[in-house]
Length: 236
Image 1 (cartoon, rainbow, N blue to C red):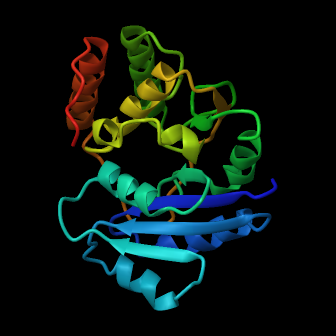
Image 2: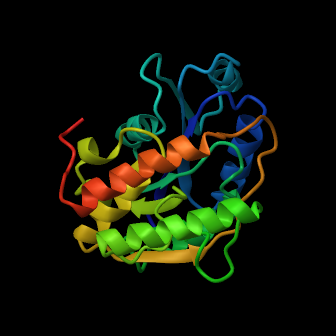
């Protein structure tokens, strides 16, 4: 794509064992265009930030957030530091396959946003229980908000800068994965064209993920109901 400059935002916490292989994979997948990788670290005690900065890679910008850890706030920090005209957000643990990146970027020629979905035909998760639970929850989100996006939790998306800047960051980017429910809601409210494509959930190469399933489910349900009943958050 002519004049394409992709900024990939990678929020992370304690991902020392994953971050360098992920950076290498992203850089390889974006070899066809100008790009930058913005690693936003929530002051990881395992030295993730120091490891990234020690490599001094010219296409990597590392940012350390010393307080108020939050996945969504880290993404916002990355968005505000990005210089590209296309933004991509993805996890730092290989949960999101870097191999999808070229497909996502190319399809932005025709859409405002390209979003990975585990619930479009061909997508799936390794854990059968989590797949079914997430599937039912996403049906709940679609029913109560009256929107069409099939996966408002995955958080692997590419979007044009001019489109996401129409969205009020302060109403979206706080908390954890619930930010994605709000983001997809506001994008649909704005009439953005969204392409959903099937994604197979990846497997982390190192470390352990978030296991607070019940607490997370309650939090996400509350945030979805707020949107459904028009209880919009104040600017954060």
